[in-house]
Length: 460
Ligand code: SAH
Image (cartoon, rainbow, N blue to C red; front, side):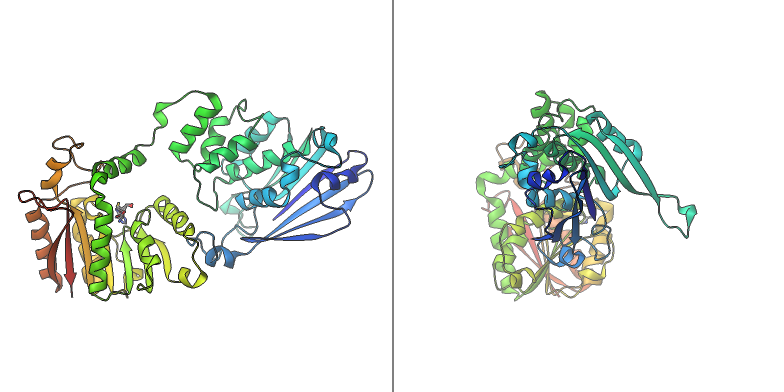
């Protein structure tokens, strides 16, 4: 991936001062995902060009600290993406911030600049590219690339070679690229959290508020996360749009709030870990791992040797990834864990070979008619020696003070079962697939309605 920036400001070599990179030198910087090289293909009084060559290491992307979900073969090493934004922020941070010790005035002065990007993925095509840069005053020229020269019928790819021309302070150009490249790509290689809002507002200062595509930019920059987008736009335009509210997230919070007073989640995790250890299960697959509540605990415990999390939601896996990243584990510890995207209702070879499978607060999210498919995937094909299934006990719901009568604990729950409904289901599953099953209450047991969570421990 190559970005060049050329100026014809006189003397043009002052670009070196602005960037804090001497035109006579070629410098390399190690980044978490590869290397950035900075050099000057031309440097005269009349014209000076700096090149930022990004050498993204695809093996590192898959194995290293980044997301573990990507394939070895991807376009990332070749295109301008959020990796370029990170490189700009790390390698050219002073210039991006508009600071220059030697020529402070020049850092604020509009100078003629031309930026060229060798390959820029533009989701939304050339039209969207123009919608982003032209309102900022750029002359845009873009050359689209066809998917494959041998197969012209396949048509255009989303990749463009792009040239942006404008007279403006260098820091403005860098800020525009920093924000708009991932927006065009509509992707980011890292988990996007609340701190991304701060970055967007900082680098969008002075131009984003009045940009006609401000909403699309914000939404895509924040990876289409509605809660973050709403927060950012609210700060940008000082108004709030309730339509953008994220139902999904508030539902998850709702369930946690209902159950929180008794720290039920903690008790559930303790019961699961104890049952796994009792079964001597060292290789564990957590089906429907969500945001990695259980994975975190398994990973911190040296007893567990191989830990896999599966979820159908890519977004949940990204959150899980980010939360595991924060544990700051050693490489050896990391090698025990993997996250995979998959559906529990389709047979999948990757689910085989484990001592135990945990299915924690997941079955109630499956449509009842699909439950049979899930049973076969787990008990007939994957066949772990131990299976732990937990699910709410609906009888207990009347005990939750903050849960209105007749309501389930989470809006996405397709059902919640009484103890006898769960036990009937589990006994029938055990019998059909050659397992035995025992039941354990989780949380304080009430003499009449039982415990808030019920667990089935299946053994083959
Ligand atoms: N086990 C986790 C998450 C429970 S929430 C915990 O205890 O915190 C239920 C999870 O099941 C969600 O993350 C949801 O994305 C996932 N899920 C629902 N249906 C699924 C399916 N068919 N295949 C895989 N995962 C599914």
